[in-house]
Amino acid sequence: MRTVLLTGSAGFIGARTADFLLKKGFRVVGVDNLNSYYDPALKTFRLKELKKNRAFKFYKADIENLQPLRNIFKAAKPDAVINLAARAGVRYSLVDPFVYLRTNTLGTLNLLELCKEREVKKFVLASTSSLYASETMPFKETFAVNTPLSPYAATKKGAEALCYAYYHLYGIDTTIFRYFTVYGPAGRPDMSYFIFMQKIDQGQTIPVYGDGNHLRDFTFVDDIATGTVLGLKKVGYQTFNLGGNQCYRLIEMIRLIEKVMGKKARIKFYPAHKADLRATKADAGQAKRVLGWTAKIGLLEGLQKTADWYRANRQWVNKLHPLQA
Ligand SMILES: NC(=O)c1ccc[n+]([C@@H]2O[C@H](COP(=O)([O-])OP(=O)(O)OC[C@H]3O[C@@H](n4cnc5c(N)ncnc54)[C@H](O)[C@@H]3O)[C@@H](O)[C@H]2O)c1
Image (cartoon, rainbow, N blue to C red; front, side):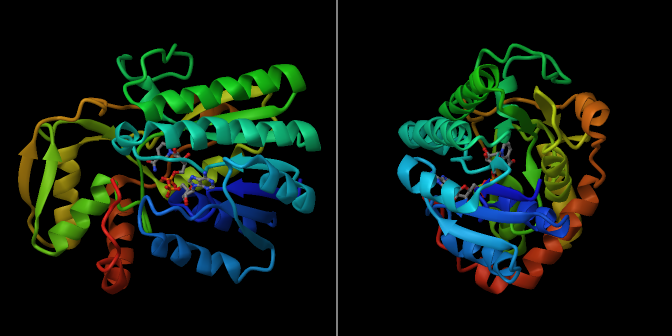
């Protein structure tokens, strides 16, 4: 397998995955619509390095639109598709649920249809730990996940279901990944660790929704990218949790950020958000057994790498436009 069509390639996880695929000798055809949910300057920054590699080709395109995608499939002749393009913020999915449905569910359907049409035999989908609301921890892939708490989670469940149907009907080998709270350099400015790091550095008060005791299974982006590449293996139809195997309370994560930034946080607490899960913890045993994957980078080490990147780039990062959400 040589050519991978990777959607969301200008995104946080997508750009890192593209980099890892290129290092493994794959040709990567990147697709991204560079939308402005957060400042596209960050997406352009991530793409700049990738574009230096001749094995990387980029198309600015929207997975919601079938015909332009069809032309890309024809030109690229991919052996596999990794679909990381998505509307990924939980809270903004309450503001504009329609765009989540169009990108996360219809976009996935478009890609599956083209895999059928062009006889692409392998599909990888990024899904989410947000599906595990109301379940007991640690979360296992076999749980029913019938109670999504947000339009975001619901649209990912729809995407997963479509993948199963296409596997069943057309034999498209499919790997579903449920990622657990991914963090790292050049990350998403809507995620709490990014906001906290920036505000702590600038001496601003940080907003914490809830009492700070929310538990999260934090996973470093390099571990996620490594796992995603391993997902190209033939598996039939399988779902894997990719979780860092280290749960921290939000307040503990803030203490670690203070440590790597060498500054104290000022915190203001707000009521918990209804769409947020109280706690997440992955059982990542299946990924270990089938793909040989385990998370390698601990939270302190990962936050240190993130802080190093932030400090090296803070001049322009602090000028990014505020979030749309
Ligand atoms: N970051 C996390 O903690 C996390 C956790 C669970 C799941 N995920 C999933 O991982 C994937 C990547 O997330 P991320 O954190 O890198 O987010 P991201 O927003 O940085 O990346 C997503 C990319 O997709 C692109 N995109 C969005 N809609 C598109 C469309 N219609 N057509 C083409 N491109 C489009 C965006 O421009 C962006 O560059 C997503 O599917 C997300 O749902 C992320």
